[in-house]
Image (cartoon, rainbow, N blue to C red; front, side):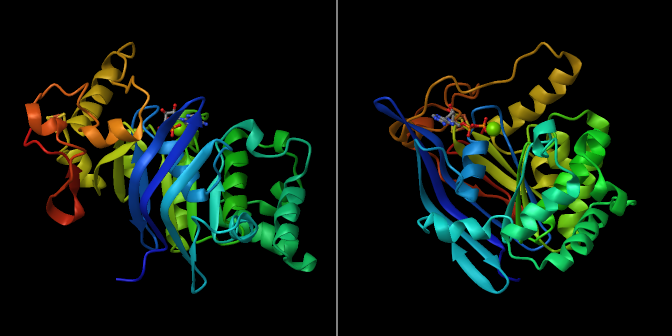
Length: 324
Ligand SMILES: Nc1ncnc2c1ncn2[C@@H]1O[C@H](COP(=O)(O)OP(=O)(O)O)[C@@H](O)[C@H]1O
Ligand code: SF4
Ligand SMILES: [Mg+2]
C-alpha cells in the first residue's frame, strides 16, 4: 500500500467563547489513499466543519487545534498543525485545496473566468504564457466541452452547473493532492448536485488525488465516496467502507441516522436527532456521545468514559462500549 496523501491523527478543535471552551471536534482521525474519497456525515453541529477547517488549518480567531495533519505532495511531507502560517499558505491551492460551497459567491461576479484563473496562477508563480492553456486544460478536466469560450465568460453568463464545474476546475488547476469539500453542493438543485459530484469524484480519481467530502446528504456518501466517517457530538462514532456503513451499520447512532433519513423521505416534517448541549472537553471524555439520545440504554457501560473503537470486518469500526 502506498503512503496516504492525508493522515489526520487525533485532530481536536476548541473554540473559546466568553468564559468557556467549546469542543468543535475531538480526536478526529482519518487517512486517505491516492484515488480515495471519504465522506464525513452527521447532523448539524456534529463537528464536520470544525474537522474540515482543522484539516485546512483555516480556523477562526477564537479557535485552537491540536493533533496532527500530515499532507504528502510531490514527494514531500508536511505537518500542517503548528506550521507557521506563512509556510502553510503556499500549500493551499497547490498541495491542499478547499472546494468552496456552491453558491453564487464562489466565483467573483464581475471578473471573467480567465481573470480568476490568472489570480490563482499569479499567486503560485505559473509563467504567464501558460495561463490560457492551463486554464483551458483545467476546465476540460472538469468536463467542460467549450472551455475556451467558458474561460472568456463572466460568471453570470454561465448556468449554475457550469459555474460549479468552473469552481471544481479552479480548485484542481494546481493539481492538489488533497481536496476538502465542505457541503460543496447543498445550494444546488438535486440534479445539478449529482452532476457536480460526478465531476468532482471523477477528476479526483483520475488524478489519483484524495478528497474529504463533508455532506449531510447520505446519498452522496453512499454513491460517490469509498469510505464514510459518521460524526455525532464532536466525535467520530463509526468509520468504514460505504457499503458496510449503509448495509450493516453498527453504531446505534448510525442506525438511527439511516432510519431517520428513510423516515424523513416519507415525512419531511420529522426532525433529525441533534446534540442539544454545548460540549466541553470533560463532557466528551465522560461518556458515549450518543448517551442522551440513545434508546438502547445499556446502562453503566455508556458512562465509563468515551468508548474505544470496536474493530469489525474490512476496516469497519464503531466507537461504542455496548453490544446494542
Ligand atoms: N466559531 C465558532 N465559535 C464557537 N463555537 C463554534 C464555532 N464554530 C462551530 N462551533 C461549535 O462547534 C460545534 C461543531 O460545529 P460545526 O463544526 O460547525 O458542526 P457541523 O459542521 O457538523 O454542523 C458546535 O457545537 C458549534 O456550535
Ligand atoms: S454505548 Fe450506550 S449510549 Fe452509546 S450507543 Fe451503546 S448503548 Fe447507546
Ligand atoms: Mg458545517
